[in-house]
Length: 277
Ligand SMILES: O=C(O)CCC(=O)C(=O)O
Ligand SMILES: [Fe+2]
Image (cartoon, rainbow, N blue to C red; front, side):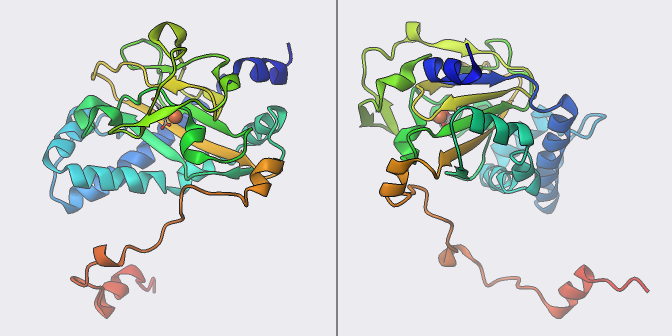
């Protein structure tokens, strides 16, 4: 069966070794750099291993003491140039095309997740209940999500992604609002229907925005790092006829949250633009 036929039939395609382990480690080091800078500015101490990764214990301590600081770092890490760079891979573009997206466009910003009960404010922050991404995106009908494992997500304890193969063909399922977002109400969505998708560091799962999926159970020992890119197809006629609807408004400045305190002085600027001669 061709890649396209298998994808159409099952609703997903696993691309092994999209990225090398080295590429993944370099990216996580950049993420950790965001944390180090913020922790330093807050006077929070951390420990790191011989490669420069912050230890899990230090990250957990940071979250426990300063959860807002931790969340700010997560948001900033999502915006790293490096995050976007990982999406500009020829193999991603080629695979999207092979699977049926003619002219891909991001439907949302990249989504970086570090799943760990110890660094989550609620259960749904590290264990996403069954859902279809299309419900929140509402983009092209052939939308695709890429879900990349930044670390090995192999054994059940680290919570491999769970999917219901072929469920994309069921169409959009009924949901009810809940404290996470919306819960699917459909008898076909039950524990027996899910399969786990164990992935090695650098593997990338392409799946339909209609495929039912959820997070696996995480035992809280090793954090699970993943990165999602979400694509619409600008060529899909229904999407165009709906006026390229976007349920994710672009960021606007949050005026009320910007402080007037401690604004930069000319001296601060001199520190940034230091003359070299
Ligand atoms: O990474 C996960 O476990 C699931 C996340 C997810 O499905 C989502 O963010 O829509
Ligand atoms: Fe999802």
